[in-house]
Amino acid sequence: QGQLVESGGGLVQAGDSLRLSCAASTRDFNRFGLGWFRQAPGKEREFVAAINWSGGSTYYTNSVKGRFTISRDNAKNTVYLQMNSLKPEDTAVYYCAAAKNSGINYKTDSYDYWGQGTQVTVSS
Image 1 (cartoon, helix red, strand yellow):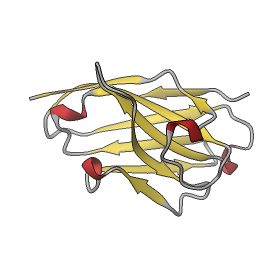
Image 2 (tube, helix red, strand yellow):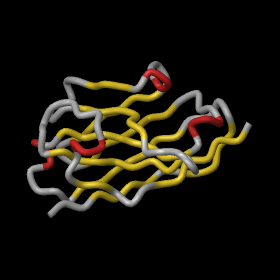
Image 3 (cartoon, rainbow, N blue to C red):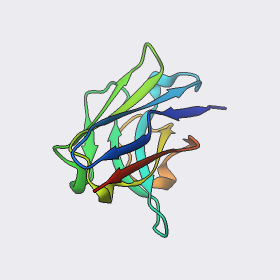
Image 4 (cartoon, rainbow, N blue to C red):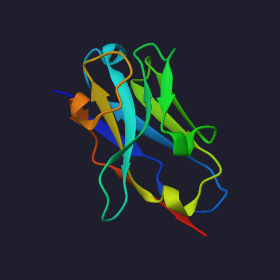
């Protein structure tokens, strides 16, 4: 059974940057596809970014392309989300997730393990 713990959220101003981290205790971490999702108040959880097992392939939702970067360090069992040029509409609870499918996954039901989430608030 895997456990994911996010960190790095906070309150920032529009245009600022944040880096989220997600540490995993999941066995065989380097075989998992990983992703970041977010959920704003009153809205459904939505896909943000995904990365395959090696880190060689990534995928982003259109609204964050060019601003966010997902990466992973398999030696540290950690996945990151670098967020630049933050906007108020990026405000949400951000969740990391791990999928036994080692490729790119962008659907919530493709993921097997979830973190508890970290709050990101961007003020205008």
